[in-house]
Image 1 (cartoon, one colour):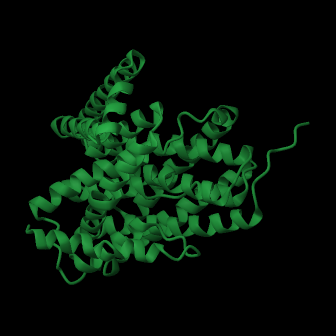
Image 2 (image 1 turned 90 degrees about the horizontal axis):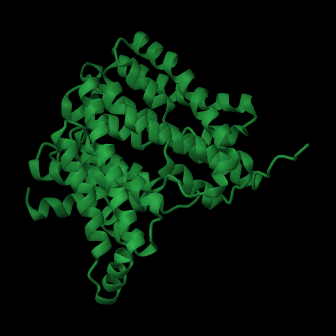
Image 3 (image 1 turned 120 degrees about the horizontal axis):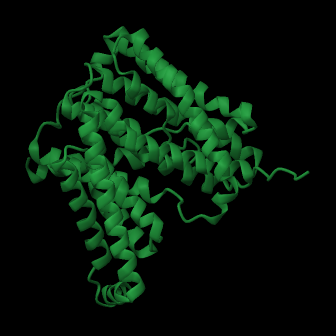
Length: 382
């Protein structure tokens, strides 16, 4: 891969921000980046070659940072979450229970044999998408807090469960590897807490700010790529390494300066490369020419909406119930892992992403309805 080719990948990735500019459409930037990747990759004109080793390496680094950002959006430190923790957990559990038979049923109808994978996809959510939507719409109240808990729990559990569900034959090895990565993240968190209590961390942060050393960014990149290297060694996706690092950051509270630096590296460089690469690696012609994959896409999209809408039976506003069905990180991870390991059938990755994009469209509509309805007020106490 040449520098000119790298410039092309970054340049076409600008389609993402362009499509996201109209505020009324609420199109996530990553949707445009994936779509333009489809156009310039295998499905389209073939300008971008996803098998290029340099591009694949940069995409892996971008994947880790994308999941780091997703993990950092999990609102671990929000004290208000405790009041609705039980309700949010119940909503997530209910969605998970409904997702299992639905996923197995979709796999049986389509004949793909990926029932557990579909169950994880159906139950998943995306804190990285939902949290900004809730903040932007100014939604408040008990039901909103319960939705936040639901989304955070579903996002975390499904990301951990995904590698086990996608390749059940290697579930034991994947589970051991996942435990190793999570344990390493726990060690990192303990070390960071000790350094913080001793005052060393604060001194380094002040020095970095005064001398413009970028130390916080550097040591967080060292952490995420070290955990990513461990993940690759034990046969686990770098997805988990990025998410665990994000959880570590979220549990300590992400400084604004670090957030800006991570935004520059991730959203300004590696994240667009990853999403363009992902789109380029898909062959959507296989979806269009394969009625079975069209069926998978439709059933996953419809199943996601129905399963999450069931939360309305438990008293959640329908708009919030559908909002919790926003899916992107887990489907993207599923397609990335499946594409690289050859686990998915031809066109299946495109079907999974198509269903995810439909969920994003539903989320955008649900957010618009919730926003017009105004803040969701707390329930009246008896």
